[in-house]
Length: 155
Image 1 (spheres, helix red, strand yellow):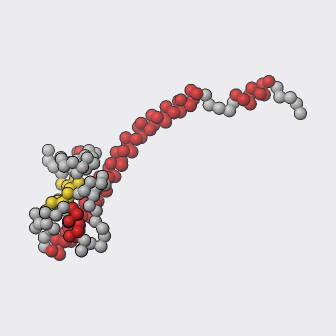
Image 2 (image 1 turned 90 degrees about the horizontal axis):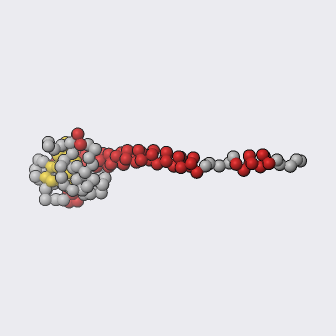
Image 3 (image 1 turned 120 degrees about the vertical axis):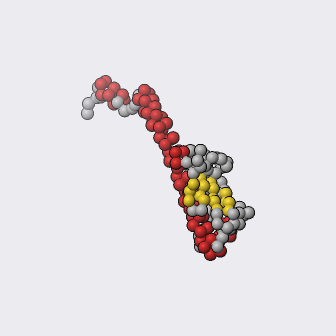
């Protein structure tokens, strides 16, 4: 059982940690990676909301087609989305969406005969320019399903 030498004590106390500079470098690297990843994640989330809204609009369109096949016309254009979904409820076994993935109510229009449209006003919830394939990542633009087809505005 010997005594600890001075070099043994120095080695035991000085080798167990990170310096402040090393910690700052790691934090800076994490910050840079986060700054690059967060915008990509936000875009992916918005694209997911857009696709979810389109899927919900397709479901409404299919139910409208079933209604039109049975009744020979579409629900009245004087109905809002809730009234239209209520009119479809007798034919549908599933609950139909009334809101897009941004939680804005869909807009329903119909001539009451042979034409209808279901519209999502996009992320901003404000009626405006319709989405085009070139502007697919502008999530404030409107999505329109008309007579079973998604349409794009011509600018």
